[in-house]
Image (cartoon, rainbow, N blue to C red; front, side, top):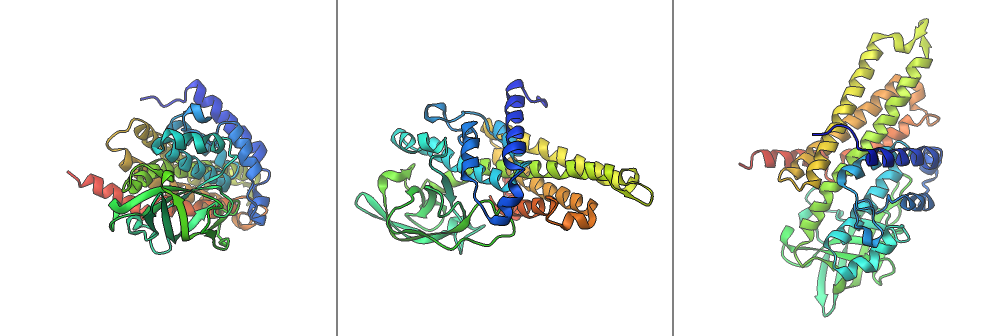
Length: 379
């Protein structure tokens, strides 16, 4: 049980923090305002090894651990939550190809995904299947050496811009056992995209529907065997939940730092805000919740790395706690700023808008409770 980062972890944490401070934070407000997708900044992050964090080295990956990834995404999110979160999605989709793809599939896509020459999206949610993911309806009917797809995916980050879509589709019976995983390339006939969604936050990445109309995808693009797609999706989400929890940690850290600075500068009733015990206690609670959330994310990441039998439960616990705590910390930081916190001149309202979706995606926090309870009551 080690609570200190090792020398290598401290080094790439510093690299990620510096990148966030220099390449993300100065531009994040403009990206949010203009709904601009900073692809070139993402490729700069890829040059540091951040686009294939737990992908194997033979295809350009960094071959790091889930704990290492959590440390990196936490640091990057201090600069821009939305952009860091998209990078985590690209990493998840790339890992699925690395983990479940054949050697031919790995060599076909990953050498271009790790430098983000190609950008990847993950497609599970549909208009009528969110939390009940196993009820997805997008149908893939096999015709010779192709599948013919019909259906649609909803709320897909990167839709329309990404080059690769790792999609869960129904090839068989109803339920989880009938789901398979296909890699679909942009430009495939029958693949199209809906209008860009207008969102509360995460505005530095496009979100839209992915639509399949008699879309012909080679059988050679299937990851794993038919019927293994739901297992692949869920294994990907264990790591995705850690990453999104880590993004909440980073955003909350940025908010807490700003709140600490503000109470040391702002005066009311003839004294600094930092001298009011009510605000001292508020900051103390914020720091305590943040530290507890960080420990939960790091422990869950260690369990996922070790393939521990309770890894899925701990990933759900950590995601639920870290995203709830992160949002609350940011909200308290905004409250400390009073009316200024509500202005777009300060980053807190953007932090709040960006972090809110973390309680919804990668499995809602209500579904996290379902997973935890199911595991607790199994025996």
